[in-house]
Image 1 (tube, rainbow, N blue to C red):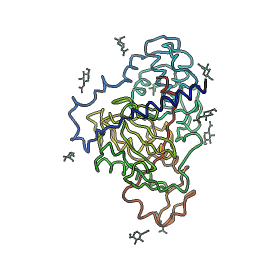
Image 2: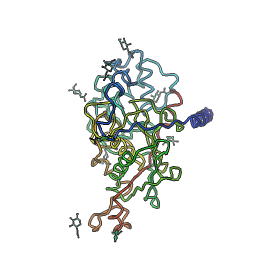
Image 3: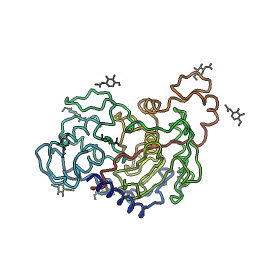
Image 4: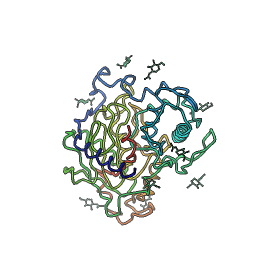
Length: 368
Ligand SMILES: *[C@@H]1O[C@H](CO)[C@@H](O)[C@H](O)[C@H]1NC(C)=O
Ligand SMILES: *[C@@H]1O[C@H](CO)[C@@H](O)[C@H](O)[C@H]1NC(C)=O
Ligand SMILES: *[C@@H]1O[C@H](CO)[C@@H](O)[C@H](O)[C@H]1NC(C)=O
Ligand SMILES: *[C@@H]1O[C@H](CO)[C@@H](O)[C@H](O)[C@H]1NC(C)=O
Ligand SMILES: *[C@@H]1O[C@H](CO)[C@@H](O)[C@H](O)[C@H]1NC(C)=O
Ligand SMILES: *[C@@H]1O[C@H](CO)[C@@H](O)[C@H](O)[C@H]1NC(C)=O
Ligand SMILES: *[C@@H]1O[C@H](CO)[C@@H](O)[C@H](O)[C@H]1NC(C)=O
Ligand SMILES: *[C@@H]1O[C@H](CO)[C@@H](O)[C@H](O)[C@H]1NC(C)=O
Ligand SMILES: *[C@@H]1O[C@H](CO)[C@@H](O)[C@H](O)[C@H]1NC(C)=O
């Protein structure tokens, strides 16, 4: 059975890699460059996940059309692990109730196991495609366990990928490149440079842009739908981007989204590119998702929102992996990387990138 699954996986990966689709990114350097609202995605009609609205109030014992799709969603993000997705039914069984409770715990909601409106609104939010839960243990709370109480008191925290992979000590000067087929403008590339800079400011890792995509540590590309890594994008809204754990280096954005530089309170269907880039770079460096809502590594983001500053939770997490950046005058204590003290002052300008990320859910898509 296991062999069959691996075989299937390889076959699907091979067939996907033959139909890889890149995109000319829909990138707009400012809000006024965006197309008029009538030409942008419609949050009501174009959001695949808005169908979950219909499940309001569902709980254990119900049988409602659409629950099977919700199970696929929860399976995809790691909340259901041991089930076979082909056999998902519309029955609200105890496995689904446990998954909903786990989801509510991770997103700081009331842990009722009931699909209340607050939970359903959260589920419909655009988000990162990386899973929240790896191998059935929470990756969004440091202490990782579910609780039976309704009010949560567990301390939310940063997380890592399994076995906490990071870039090794001899690979801390990373370079990055953009998929040429995307034809990104300088303005778009500068957005990524700023995003890398956020992380380079707090850890002794540097990011330098190079032109040879295939040779880069971090490879940034906009893709649509199936693109060969087993993690197909889903058109507008829904999943926005994903990135792989160290030292893979793949950083993929959904080429169907409308990307803009800046907050666009007026339009919730265009996404601030820098906000999403800072998040994905966190994955490239080895961070998983965090249940701290202010953290960059929180999994979801609303359209129109700009969130580019690292929170204490992000900084703490990434410094566990890499130590902290040493001040040029040597006054700041660091955990590990002190040998580069002194040369930092000239390296932090310009292009700094970081990246390593991971892909978590290998299994979910095969059954969707
Ligand atoms: C917005 O971007 C467009 C296209 O690049 C440019 O022509 C325009 O001057 C920019 N507007 C502002 C306010 O920056
Ligand atoms: C989105 O679609 C809904 C339903 O068809 C419609 O009422 C609404 O006006 C649309 N919004 C925009 C911005 O086009
Ligand atoms: C949601 O429920 C309404 C009323 O029960 C129904 O008309 C509609 O088709 C449902 N929508 C979906 C996407 O299932
Ligand atoms: C999944 O695992 C849980 C906990 O180990 C168990 O209670 C449940 O029966 C399992 N479900 C399936 C479909 O195997
Ligand atoms: C949790 O439940 C309480 C009491 O029912 C309610 O006041 C509160 O708004 C709920 N919080 C969330 C995040 O749903
Ligand atoms: C998940 O757990 C299984 C069995 O404990 C292990 O073999 C596998 O490597 C784990 N996968 C990840 C991604 O940690
Ligand atoms: C949660 O993690 C902190 C820090 O690692 C630890 O001190 C604390 O005992 C843990 N709490 C639980 C309930 O595991
Ligand atoms: C080093 O920098 C820190 C913070 O910028 C400052 O507080 C401290 O006085 C400086 N130490 C020396 C020796 O310059
Ligand atoms: C920074 O660069 C300048 C000229 O390129 C050089 O003179 C200076 O020593 C460098 N500073 C450090 C801290 O490396």
